[in-house]
Image (cartoon, rainbow, N blue to C red):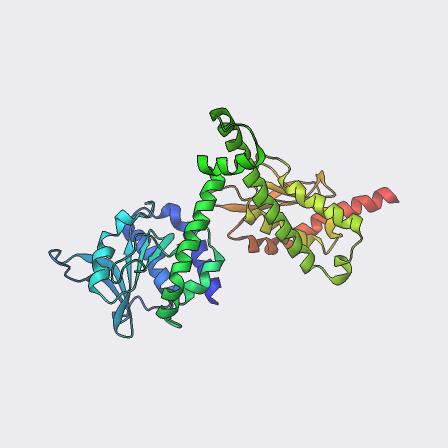
Amino acid sequence: MEFNERVAALATKVQNQREAIQTEEAAKNAFVMPFISMILGYDVFDPLEVIPEFTADVGTKKGEKVDYAIMHAGEVQILIECKQPRDSLKIEHASQLYRYFSVTNARIAVLTNGQAYHFYTDLDAPNKMDTKPFLVLDLGDIDDALLPELRKLTKEVFDLDSIISAAEELKYLGQIKRSMAAQFKEPEDDWVRFFATRVHEGSFTQKRREQFRSLVTKASSQFIRDQVNERLKGALYASLPKQAADTPSDALESEEVALKDVARETEVETTLEELAGYQIVKAIACSEVKPPRIVGRDAKSYFAVILDDNNRKPIARLHFNGKARKYVGTFDANKTETRHLIESVDDIYLHADAIRTAVRAFMGEESHKNQ
């Protein structure tokens, strides 16, 4: 498998098994060792590459251990410390990494709970581990932009100088993105004031603050949704044959309406995974009907894909709201839904025949009415 595919495969494993993992040792065996092996490419059973329970005397601390030390070119290059699978990762959990960082040749330290991986180096002071990570990888929500940097730490193309030189920019970019995400979710007073003073000329009272807090939160959500829809629309048009891409403006207008229907219910949060699933269902159904006729509509319990913006013409339903399991629902001629367990959105393709059959059934009804 390619590097990105290996990361995706481990992410799927983590999502499927994390509820069953209760201890630190279980997380090491199920997630961390596969990360070292599958992602970084080191042989976890070769002590010349990976040393478990790595020990180095640090001052008055004798016999203290760090969970894994990864060797490259005969020297310790990466230190990994594991925590409980349900622990949030905080710098207070990294005391061993701090001490070991200063007495080994390692320039990279990793704090993990099996799902999240925080990578540290020594940007602020030589041989002293920074208090903030330069790279944060969450296998529950992978940022694809980070994968090229992560790949530099693999055995195959180990490039420490390159990742250290990029670490400062990665560190600040990551912190800014996480800060923005936090503000979008729960805006602080300064963030609310920033926007309020640009659209409201009166005094910024407590009442106005609370009013604009709600407005800023809602505007942030709608802005992100609009950006996602624009990207999805661009991807859909790019994948269509030239004849379909040159569709008259009224058809394009219908497509825009269809995409807006994805977020018709304002209290429903449409996820990128649901939009990706919608795109797959639509790509399958487009073998039977023109693209503008396939409409996505999100609800609180599922994401519906329907024909002609008509709830009585269901093509498929995406049940992605569960924490551990995902299902795609398909329909027979009687419009009876059957749910199929899937591991990833790509598994929707396994049910392509049922999706096309549902569309053909409605097309058959139309043909019968027109006779």
